[in-house]
Length: 308
Image (tube, rainbow, N blue to C red; front, side):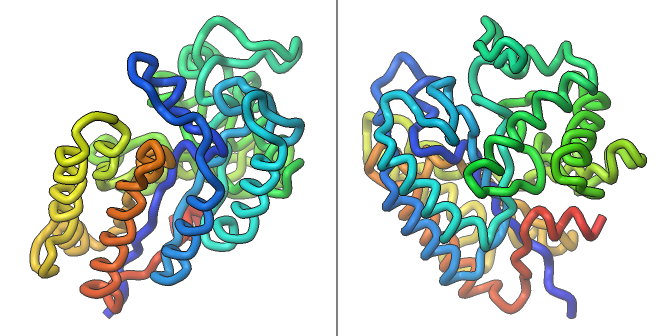
């Protein structure tokens, strides 16, 4: 019997905590320690986890990964990038999450605009999107993290998807001469499974891959009542697969044949230094391995895109 494809999305990968900038009414830790990369990589290696890992090229507008970030020691940035190259890139398809996951960037004038990236992309044509994505690809290549696709911050591109998909494909043809790439934007049931969104000599084949499960570790982002956060995370894990392995959304999705796509965020695992999400992630991976290890096949997003 064929194994069901399964994959993991990690969004917002960065040496800094992007939620520090996105949730301004509460206090958050700014720097995410490199030890998180090492432990995350060890868990994924132990359980054979594969998927898609986004790295933000200009996180929150604090600078470029290939030139340095403000409020982030160069030593910390270098150790983060080295750990990603060694522990994560061999297991995951790397993507930029556009440029800043924050304000849009004028790549010609090299200055940030007073609109967010999703608003910029919504009014851009395919050529402009291709230039913007190419800039992001080049930054990651400069730090030896060659990407395979693109991650959308928020719902970026959803209101301009024809140009968005075309621009992504054009960017990968230009920069890396790729005949196939992917992007992550949607969730079920908006898009029921991986789907070819455009295919031409100019773009190659561009595949949209949706997530199928929620980020059950997100409650760890909210400082306050630790007991409530831990309880919410545990309830979320049980909803994906129960402690006895007999129930959970992942079992229902297996009956549909997959691919099953889990998601979490780098800051969700971090939980402002409490690592509630990372602890929960290890618990969830152990359950999947224990009960479904011989029934699922972990795949990177590049591998999934090649099957469509």
